[in-house]
Image (cartoon, rainbow, N blue to C red; front, side):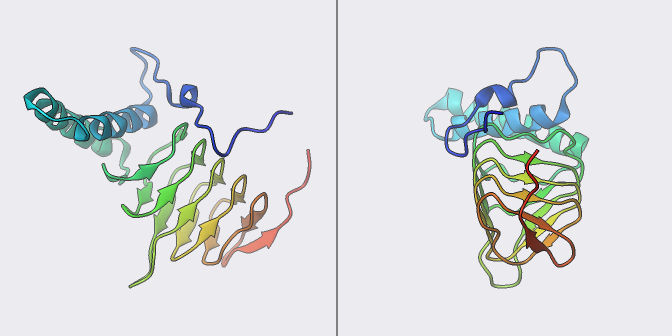
Amino acid sequence: MTQISSEIPDWSREAKPLWVWVPGRSLLASIRYYQRCRERKGPLAWLGRKLAILRYRWWSIVTGAEIPLNAKLGGGLLIPHPNGIVIHPDSAIGPNGLIFQQVTIGTRAGKQPPVIGGHVDIGAGAKIIGPVTIGDHAKIGANAVVLHDVPPGMSAVGIPATIIKPKME
């Protein structure tokens, strides 16, 4: 079994098929387009940013997700069911991650936002809150509440989350 890279983004994971209803990928595409336009200058870039914002707002409403336009999202991110995802604008997410529905990545009052490594799978309903670092290839279980660091390759499950070594398949 080949392991997905935690450093090199696999952009094919975000590829959006033409004329197919894929709200999660459409939302990501609108964010990526805005970020590309933000770095350009001139009237066409200005128009591109305005169109990207409208597209982003549409897909945010459709998906019910709160992912800021300036989010630090690594390439190859998958959000197959984007409903209810909330990401703090200052948190960082590494490449090739997987985020399911109802996930919250945020801060506690006056604390730093989470930093999530590459190829991290975050289960439905999980909450990652505060100055937490999630290592590469970690897994966060469904409905887990992560308040402490998770080492690379480990899993976090439960409320509050406890660290366990994943079973080999």
